[in-house]
Length: 144
Image (cartoon, rainbow, N blue to C red; front, side, top):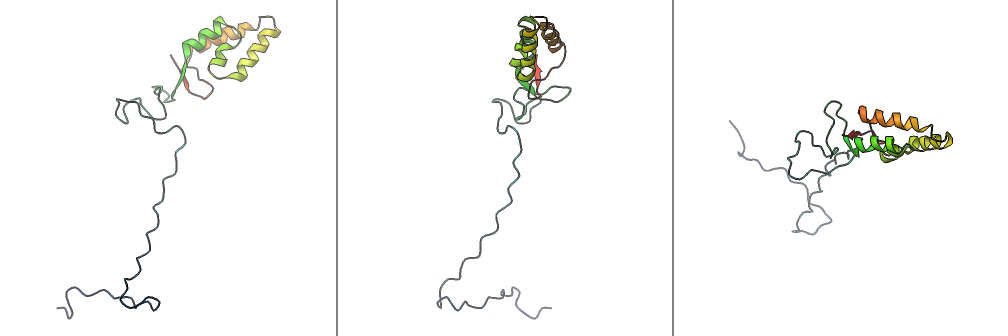
């Protein structure tokens, strides 16, 4: 058994002496802002048109797809172009193409100082680029 009303009135706060009688009470303070998620590093916001989000092989961080074995994103550079440039222009041009300018400059200097004999290094490097899964200067796999 209860001894009071079914829905008791909530306790009221005492009136504020600085406000005139009959005025509206002040609004409650706003709630604290919700915490924002931490920003993720890398390229964000890209979705290939016509494909649903999360489709196999499609990622906003990998617009050219992912290598099926290692999961490393593909580069915008082509492995065949880089290898052929290394073979037919033996001055480190293929290394410049993939963005590896340090080794490209070294190959260029070695080839010029040795009167072209250092071009053998470029020839072998081009064959290795074509035969293996090579990476560009950013660490992405070259597309074939």
